[in-house]
Length: 135
Image 1 (tube, rainbow, N blue to C red):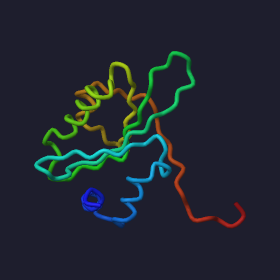
Image 2: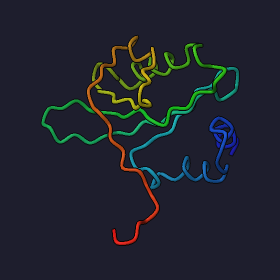
Image 3: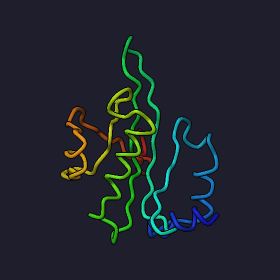
Image 4: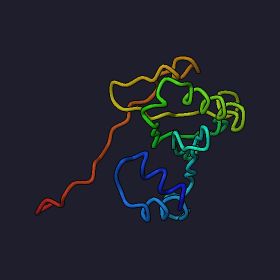
């Protein structure tokens, strides 16, 4: 509950109970694990990793990094680089595992360049909209 409250604070919106359910219920997002980064006992970032299936024979395993939220006062302090370093060391990202990282349109975090992430896919979103009569 404490982590959920801290994550809710980081997002600045939402209901703590909803965050508790998302974090605790594996059926909500199968294959997705949520992580927090802490500094001085305070949650300073949250992110999600989803293991993606591969059909291509011999293809490297692939993770998608998404839902990245960083506490504004910690931007530019090396937290993102710490996360990428952890991914490389603990999950073999960049050696045995491929990483797809989502970023907002027009935003290319400097850590992407530092760790050698190259543009490879374009993402298109089919947003949820109110139901339109006749569709």
